Length: 256
Image (tube, rainbow, N blue to C red; front, side):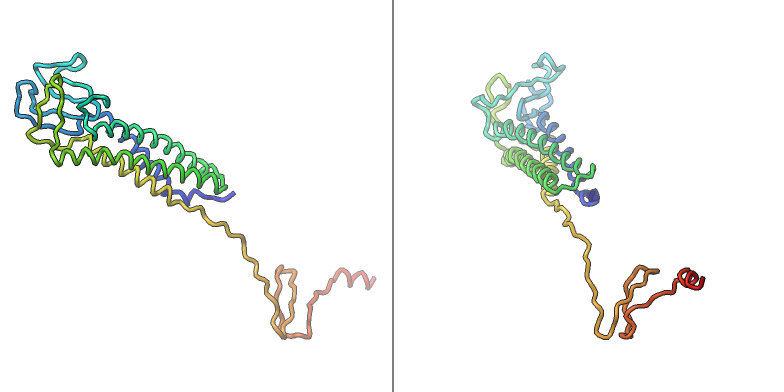
């Protein structure tokens, strides 16, 4: 059984990075603060700020209140809605795909580390598990990076969304800036990409058997076996090819 734990310290760290990145992906999906709109009309949006997420739009209002919130008005954004922009529609799909890929990638990484820590020294299942988990982590990070960076570009270029009248949103914000959803999404996909690279870079140690190099006596030397030292040494005197020791017990029997 080969001890392999010392070869997978980086992969252990990579697993934690992947788990944290995947957890942050879940939080990113649930956050509504992807884009923060600053509005000048405070008659409905009392706080002057509206949050645009990938699933809903929310703002504080003393005029409009939804039943499940105290002073917050929210409206859902569906992928089938005609006004839904491409960046939000892509985020709804790709973030869920990243969530599933990250979950399966975690399972593959845990299986590979389990084989190492439990002493399994077969290279094939360990390589397959790490390659499978690393590839899924990498794909999950890339899937989540597309909507996050796309929405970031929409904020930087101050692109608007033509909401219907029941959303009570202005045609365009005075200005907008990135919220916590985009920032957390950037951290999450970077962690998963780093985790995937770490797992894909694992190399199984090469097995090397003990080298046996026979040594032959040089010319003019003779091989002599020393039973007391259990070793073979060479004597420069070629006339004495072996050296023996007297057995005193045998001599005593002959003298009887």
